[in-house]
Amino acid sequence: MIPKDAKLVFKGVTFDTYQWEQKVYDGSFRTFESVKRANGAEVIATVGDKIIVLTEEQPNRPAPFLSLPGGATDKGEEPLDGAKRELLEETGYSADTWELWRTIQPSSRIEWHINTCIARDCKKTNNQDLGSGEKIKVDLMSFEDFLELSLEPSFRQHFLKIDMIHAKYDAEFREVFRKIIFG
Image (cartoon, one colour):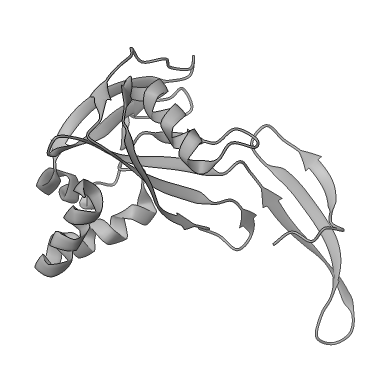
């Protein structure tokens, strides 16, 4: 997405900004710009017939929000490795059965991929190992209650909400989605 000859014009904590000159249709040149950030890993994690859902607080957010375990992958870290690390750090749970379900790029202007992984039959193996800017409460939720989160404004996985709403209102897809999550 960002051309190899693009110039890094700003290196930030989260975003790096690149610019490049590009020829447009009338033959003139324009400056184009894009940002890049670390890829993300989010985890749909199951414990028996329940799904792990987090209530998180962060200092830069005005109110607690609901989310799945996940976060930014480290440089050079594979999506599944990042998902495993994030699940363990944020919840203390780990799993033997993992699947990289899908990867999306939510914006054409940001070089950033969100990798959604599924961890089945999780077990509590550690204590949480939270960063100094995190407060996380771990809850277990039924599949039906999980689908209800699709209507919850504070649920952070916006791109997953599409599948959740589809499953909520389409019985056939609900069973397909349940099988994707629980195997």
